[in-house]
Amino acid sequence: MKTPLIIEAFRKIKREDFVVEELKEESDINAPLPIGYGQTISQPLTVAFMLELLQPQPGDIIFDIGSGSGWQTALLAYCVGETGKVIGIELLPDLAEFGKRNIAKYNFISKGRVEIISGDGSKGFLREAPFDKIISAASARKLPEEWKKQLMVGGRLVAPIKESIWLFVKKSDKDFEETEFPGFAFVPLIEG
Image (cartoon, rainbow, N blue to C red):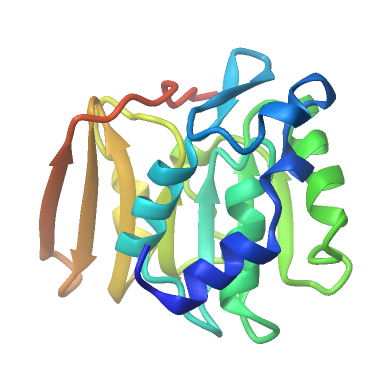
């Protein structure tokens, strides 16, 4: 990590607050950990790498797909500050509730910085679009077109596709600058 805001977010938002009770002692290891329902809380270095690509800023409106335990959502909420907002979407209702409980420890939901939706993130979230930034925590076979449409011009989208992390920067309504970073493993994106 090199961005001071992201480093500060990692110091303030404790991963141990987002893992299942029986794995609290392992929350500091640099590995993905199971959170139930066949899902994981991502490896810290991978989350840091993806946030560096995303470049969250104060005031951003960010769509977080596959919000799961809520850890990445809370990190983003810290970065967007009081003037920004993070919309987290999680397909599995029980996992969405787990994430809400975890994020509530930081008062981000009560302060209006975070909203957690139980739904299919592959379709985007038109009600709050367009977004400054979009990030996905699950690997798609191909990038959903809705994500591209719901990103503002100048916005950044970070998403795993197969075994790579991709950065898409929207240059115009139709043009994207695309960069691939291979060599990663993620849980698959579940579509409803």
